[in-house]
Image (cartoon, rainbow, N blue to C red; front, side, top):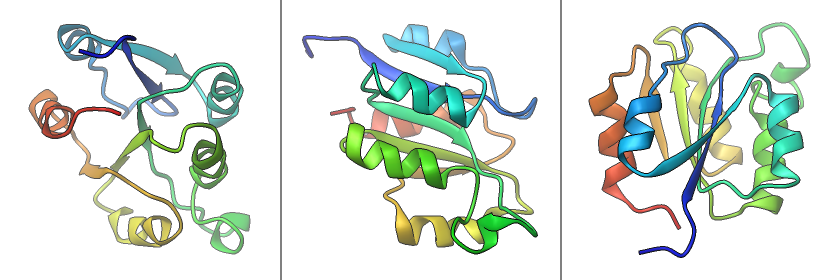
Amino acid sequence: MADRMTTLFSIIESPNHPRFDALYERLGISQVKLASQRKALQALKSMTPDWIVAEFFYGFGNNYAGANVSNLDVFLAALRKQAPTARTIVLVSKEQAQYVPRLAERFRIHAVLTLPVTEANLEAVLRATEAP
């Protein structure tokens, strides 16, 4: 058993982000709810998460299509430096799933789940491999 509790960042940027508070509690995971990428970046300065659960939003018609692919690029770049062993679970709509491979070319992604995500879907990913 690990010396410290497993920490999971839930980056909740839309109403579509599923709420699995009971699942995290049952699995002994300490959930940190963050309402934006900016707040997640701020939290990353003082905490080292084991897991990240965040929605993917492709950047249509803005800088994302050039320098960045999505809303997650800046956070994942910081994560690579601050918490390189953290595992990222990306939640994506069916319509935007085609763009996630572009993000995966740049950053390590542990799992991609298509919305709507069930508790069983997420639990299977969290249990398949132990957090570092």
